Amino acid sequence: MSPRPDVSEERKSQILDAAISVFARLGFHQARMDDIAQEAGLSKGALYLYYKSKDTIIAAILKYLFTQEMKALHAFVAAEQHGSVRAQLEQLTQQLAEAMNWMRRLMPIAFEFYAIAGRQKDVHLFLQEYFKEYRADLARLIQRGIDQGEFRAVDPQTTAITLTALYEGLALLFFVDPQAVQWNEQLIASTRLLLDGLTPHDTRESPIH
Image (cartoon, rainbow, N blue to C red; front, side, top):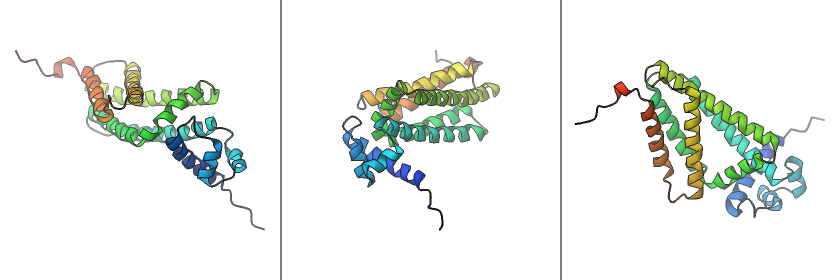
């Protein structure tokens, strides 16, 4: 008799896709495990074999999305593109803006993830490591700009923290009041303001008298 195929990863993806649809339609607090099981075409018992609660489903969804974003950033920085680092950071910001537009319907879930991090140590540690790696990659880019004479001799880690805070802060503002914050335009404009501050004084345009 041939061994039965392992469908656990396929089943997990099926459940997470169903959960995203249910959370987007009903909201996190209104959604029930029954709703997710029905959307996935599974029995409630089968659902509990893979995920024991909505918290574990939320954590799995966001861990996957954060991991994919981290892989993309690693690849972007590791490519060591030639030319302007400022242009690369602006390109990275544009990619983030596009990703956030795609994630618009998941914003309530994303902020629920931060609440879960306060309750579950493994989720807290995951987020901690994620932001540590994210800042490290941004710092590498910033250091590259300093080495090329494109940026002033600032502290790369401090600047990376500032840039990360800018991204996260705008995401929060967009979540609270999406009508007041035009995500794409504000993200790009804010990043350019920060990058302007990194430009060496002697390369800035002289004021007109």
